[in-house]
Length: 544
Image (cartoon, rainbow, N blue to C red; front, side, top):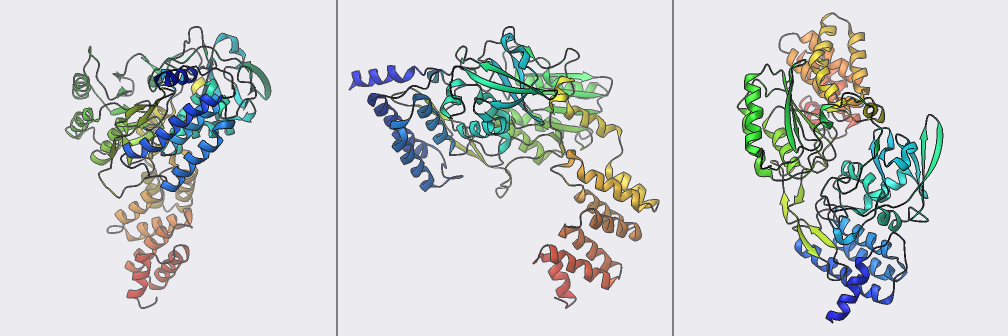
């Protein structure tokens, strides 16, 4: 048995860049590994069926077993990756970036999902002409279909994690071939578009990925590569790429910027000493705002989070929505997700950027098993992590200010997150501008302000409706006429919101405008039948 196992192991450890057919011995090996995953993953995971059913898991295992005889090595490898991904847990995976046994080859291009599409962010000099081009087609499929397919090879709790990592999976030859994205894994046509003109380059797989952890490009030899960014002042978030954490004070705008790329510690600057230095700067310098950037932080050790929260709470002059900012993205994950949750729970931080890569309920602290024949490593979560509110089932923490990175921003060395943060400190708040317009009796200008804000992408995850509603309640005790104008304005800007009509109805009744109040409540119920507050109000008036 030991000899047989050795023969199968030596066969499967070589995953060539070509999609070769499998032998009977190979099939036996794949089935042993498949059975191991099918049995061991649910047994070891704390709740493998949290986001899938037992029936769907069993069905997928049986389906792969049935299809194995017709699969190539790359197809079988991808099938196992997709099976593990079914758990929809970002920590549970077969990850080519972690696993030398997978021996994945790479195409010498870095693809990146910007807000305006998939682009060739960087490449070896051989493909210089493609750098900066928007990907139209990869192999046999469109850029959109390639990203969608790649997203099936790793677990995810939301689409932001897919958006962060799928592009790097496409450039792995074995994955692209196993997914059926390419006709010839050694010669892949990549169609890019620039200035309305299309160009096709043929990609050839180069070396093997060296296991490098979470950074998809760290295991790639990028000597001589060309980047699409322009020469000039590099934005803060791209500076000091060799440092896991660092901070700097920007005197021109009073920003204390903290780049926190990992919840870890380094020998020459321990984590605790680093945060002591951050708060020492906050106490000694004329700091107008503190920015904690965790957009590239994929985790580490959550125990380091406590000192961050304590340091902020101890400084109320900074713990304000207009002075404390946290930048997140789809890469904000694991221990960084726990930090984001703690910051949301215990501080008054304003979140900026993109949603986090984890959901509020997630599983982590993965343990590893080695598949008996292929030697592939399966990472399996061992612990559940729950938010402070156990009923909070949000798929991510959404930013108050949504700022996506476009290809134009990147080329121009612009960080839209920092741009929004600085702008917020130089412009009056929307609620203040609306209040001023209402006080002048200029309801038309107030409505335009609110309508424009509703359409502004920066408010993608936080409608200004709630802020205007709060303004109305704040004004009601002292300026009932202005308050009613604000509530009416909200119904005009958000006519399909039951809450705006409900609040308007409540305050019309307070102002003794019974008929108008009743009409507003009925409008709320037309939009949301059974709305408790509106139903109870009409019941009190014996009109329901």
